[in-house]
Image (cartoon, rainbow, N blue to C red; front, side):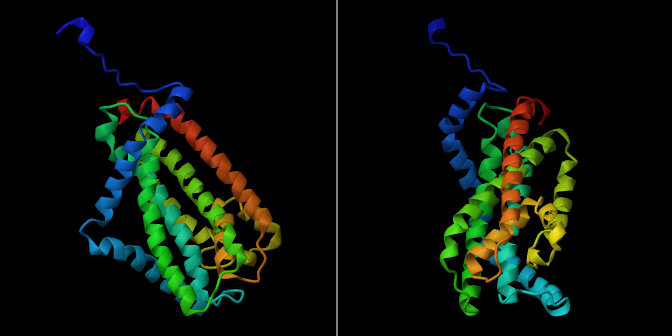
Length: 277
């Protein structure tokens, strides 16, 4: 074979920023392939896969309604308590699932990361898609519940896409941090379940955040899921309780910092993934 016909393939560990973001677009088919593969693994030939997206939030909602609604008798501000809980449960379950999936995505795809070059950012981003599918399926349950209790959204539902986008960005930002840390420090895999469990109880899933004393509400909103869950619930339930917009602004700022710092840290450590993993 003549030297002119030979090609040298270079497996690159990193790229300059301009080339990297162009590559992210060039490798979009890989993104769709990985996302579709994860969805197939979850749902193909498994009835329980689809059913679990409904059973999990339904059972969790029933437990929360009994504990916090019947026993603790927390106020629901005129919204049927099952609707209040489920409208907080769905965004939280999406965040928890996407955060966990993204955090484990690099280790789970070590076989391709160690062999070929592509923007590694594709891996955690594609892993979020299956959580988004779960979220959409579970949303059908919320719609049915709202119809059952005659809870109809009003014009505020137009804000819903904004809070969903904010939810996705929060999950991606947190997931990028954990994904990069998990490559170098494998014990982070044990930290994630604790963070998810702890976050469930410090987020306004089973209650309205207005039960938090006014002097603590801004501090409470440093948990970005507070503003996201409040906004998601406010958008769809038609509640007369005004949205605490200061808390939403704080959540937006925290999510922006989370996504930018997550991308920066991921890019700074990406060059070593193939060697360490």
